[in-house]
Image 1 (cartoon, rainbow, N blue to C red):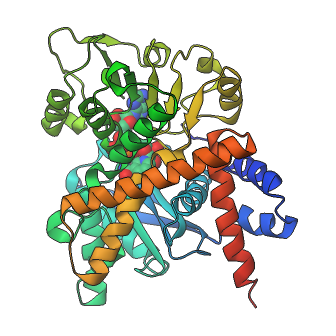
Image 2 (tube, rainbow, N blue to C red):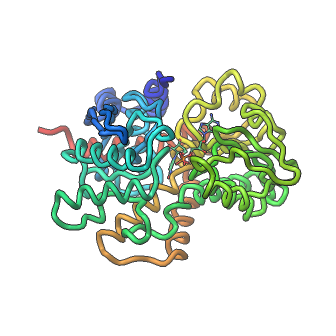
Length: 419
Ligand code: NAD
């Protein structure tokens, strides 16, 4: 199953912001094109001796404000179109939270559930060598995304280090703590989702203790968001992953579910049972009578087809691009709030930035310092987006995009076009 049209969705969002900002056609033209797109074929010797060839991409949308930054996705639906969109969203994300990075993204079209760990390791190393000419600590710094994790980042770091002849800590972020990762990085995206949710609740005069939440996706972003929102007082009544959706109107045992996934097949909730937890349809999760919905799986999950059934007052986009533009228009008309991906899930790249800074300096912070600095960045960014939304009478995505695009456009214009 491919995922056509995601880049078109990203362009539509850019064009809307450009129009509001009265950006020149020339600058818009520059920002509409990723600076570099690399597609690579990665042959891998499988455990049975067969050779499989996997297609991978690395796209660098913009380095106007600093080196490109963005995750690497291992998933069967990865396409160049999707990676281009994700790289553009990374540019806006880094700009809206004002960290000195541009945007990049990588991906390999592969169903990791069908590969052994050794096969994934060989694929990761081959893909790393194939994109090595364009990545680097001051050029483009990968990180984890769907289907990749700290272990994958460790393999990338090791591969680059083997070629360099010395350990290159700052080539990737999202590494394990033992390999120079940052405390708090694994939880950072979910923690950012939690901070964004609490900021929104404050603005809407809502009490976390009286707020119910449903979360789609129980991977890195979804599980940590659910856990931290629950710890912040919210009642998390439903979560889902590819195996199905799990529901308890009085609140789910999130910590127990996270523990279960540590040893379950492919880290899924499949087979999880507990008192009062019932299984519901994955689509049903969107239709629950909750206050907050957190899509934290993949793109285009909220569409015109299911938008009319959404009862939640607000959507906090843990995933990248989970809401299609027409669904968003419909939901905004209904008075719903959507905290856009580039702000809602920016916690990951903010702590990736902290990790990079720590790796460069070989000086590591304690977890409190990481979390405190993350909170400062998110609270400040949310506040500036909220203020622009009020001032300009636009929704939160347009406000966030106006801030982000204006920062990147200024950098492009001040640098000028080479030569
Ligand atoms: P992950 O691979 O750890 O988890 C993805 C989860 O989504 C899994 O639980 C999977 O089973 C579930 N899922 C997939 N399709 C589903 C469906 N149709 N219904 C229900 N569940 C489904 O990935 P992740 O790192 O948590 O990333 C999730 C999203 O967040 C992606 O859009 C990613 O780009 C974005 N994101 C991730 C980070 C990060 O730091 N990991 C940072 C910013 C944004």
